[in-house]
Length: 185
Image (tube, one colour):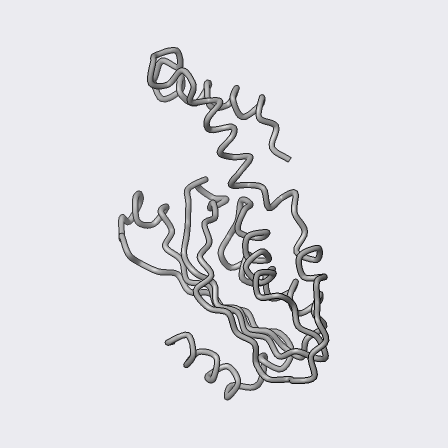
């Protein structure tokens, strides 16, 4: 849970530290706005993927279920700068499926925290694999990191792609290729 009072204090100190006057008109309400923003963009810390994935339905098929282009926004834990992109998910059910919106909610749970893309991709895969007790899952995340595009090397448009496989997706390259073909990779 975000302590908005501490965030307001920290932002006021940050503004002073970079030579700004936190009392000037344009900045006067900035600490409060930033505190509310962090409560929103870091709400995943107070959420649990298991809760969302617990809503399941019986299903006799073991055909691949895919959802692609799930848009996410996250915050890099190294620079406190945004990274954003899409997540693609495929899983092979084992007697049950979850509502498709629950896959998007699972992405949100892990994206809305201070994060590393590599960890986020693995957390999404682990949660789906565990909570659905599915035969396998594959998660691919593609993102642009503003810590790469707006500072340092300044390579706008560069994408980072991460992938996590669990269960039957780990060794079955044909299954992996089938999923990657559907998402255009």
